Image (cartoon, rainbow, N blue to C red; front, side):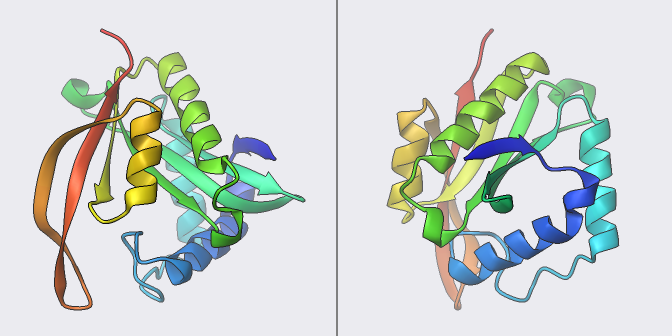
Amino acid sequence: MNIREIKEVDAAAFLVLQKQIDKETSYMLYEPGERTMTVSEQQKMLQTIHKASNSAMLGAESMRKLVAYIGVLGSPLKRKRHVGQIVIGVVAAYHGQGIGRRLLQEAEIFAKQAGLLRLELTVMKHNKRALALYKSVGYQIEGEKTCSLRIDGNCVDEWTMAKILSF
């Protein structure tokens, strides 16, 4: 498994990956078919991330095909430049192979090099597998977001989680 930066030239493949994960799971923010970004828009988004010193988009490849990704999205605001928001997705066929853990570790390496002090994410409370992974690599629950999402007309609660990298 190769983990590398997702670049502008990967925009089409990255979009395909995101749409596949959206179809496979209800744990992601986008519902199937809701992601309407074009390849050109994806390229611009990746360019913006690449230019930001506190942001990165990393992908995991298997046989030269993207099968998972993690984004560390930093803020341009001075008071929030030390914080990275995490978003992660893994193709279902690759679950249980340690890819998510490796991506989280690589994201942390990037974050430390970029001077980030805090990584944060949200996870649906019923996503026990992801919750266990995040806890196992040092993320702590900081709060609950009640009815923060609506899925199939039902309220879904989320945990807010964070990991402090250093003081």
